[in-house]
Length: 281
Image 1 (cartoon, rainbow, N blue to C red):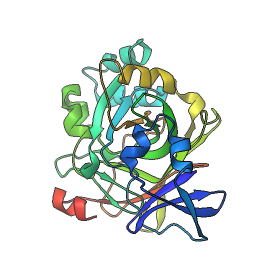
Image 2 (image 1 turned 135 degrees about the vertical axis):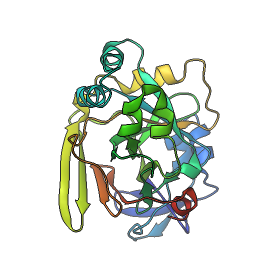
Image 3 (image 1 turned 180 degrees about the vertical axis):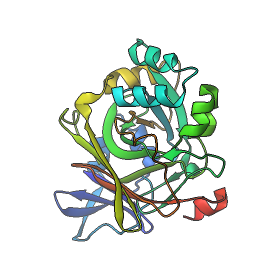
């Protein structure tokens, strides 16, 4: 089941058939002990349609958290950007405890077709294409979406303690195009593809597979739920294995497309502007 959040409400697609859901809220879905059964019990068929070009992110009160240095490529990139403290990224990559950090609340997140921001005070900015886990209030992964963890590499590279400023700001996160509910994990062969277009030309393409992750979803969620509660569930971004070369930085107007099949493609346009501009995006 794929849940799309539109301006007119929530639509659910199951094998190309479309449904509406009675009394649906994302909070209710994430609080359910069995989210798949909870959603199926509310479905009513509503005919054939295509999802709109712009979608809201599939969340309500859910916090968005993120894991770092879960792929070898991410470890290498963060060591390169932070020469003085490079060894801390190597240590966390090999450590038992993963790096986990708070990423966003609802008003900082945009959906498919929305505008993601780069900070005006950062000279080096990149998208981070990631699989996002949908985790219910009991700590069980019940679905997946695509995440873009926008990052200011120059700020984090200056000092690792600047991570919150490099990662957490309005328009710094995108989720979508849908929330895909499924029983069991995605295949390890699942590919994540990142494309960046500028003035009609492709300026970057990269890909990785879930098999390249150093950590398992269960491991990351287990640490996130240690001494932490999520009454409305949460999303957990699982880290990136795709990092553009050091001479690349995003520019206003760039178009970012992240594809993870069978979820779909998350597309966003890059802007530099005030937080108010990002919220209107």
